[in-house]
Length: 274
Image (cartoon, rainbow, N blue to C red; front, side):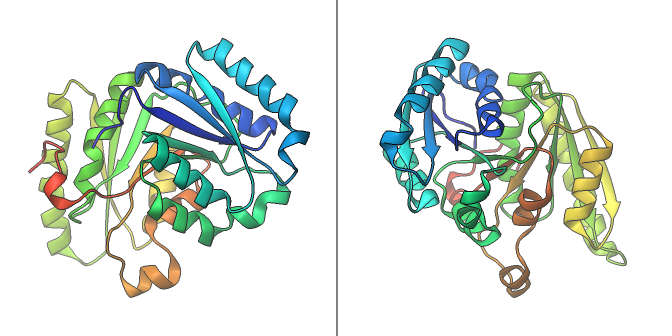
């Protein structure tokens, strides 16, 4: 899959400086996709108390980005409202700053975020740190042998071309599982070859570990990655239902921005890797 052009990017903000910074991080991507920016302003106060602030943020975003910008104020069931809006306007991307106001923390609990990521009709870009990562030089993607893992290859290549980034592939295999390792490594080489054929610099690293999320996050930090691209799983194991999925753990613990992508229907896959 790839991000749609000429569509809307929803950016969720809560009037804090941290979430305003999230807007600025999307300018390069929005311009490349010729996207319209839709600001979804989250708050617990009545809308009329925030009208002037909302107008000011919208005007600043228009002037800085040079793009079409509109805005809407939401309260109540925040993630439900975001999903409804994304479906309504056929959004190509949702950007959410998870460093939200303390008053809104109950709406941003791990369980609520997990449900939101699964139900979102388009990829979700989550940010936890306030530093500006508008420059994206190194994109990290994890590859395994699951059927949906390959589906993120297309959007990774698209982003790498937009930002002139290199791609790092990480594969994590469990100790004492020689068959999995032997099956995985040739597939990784196939993915890397395909990415390079698209004119994108690519490297790969295999790690033997039982702790998948920690291995990915440590590698991302130690290798100065600017973005982690993860694929949500379609079918969950009992362990994942009880203790959370890899994507959810990465989103909850990563200081680096994460793009979470839901799997497409199998007949719709078109990553270029077969």
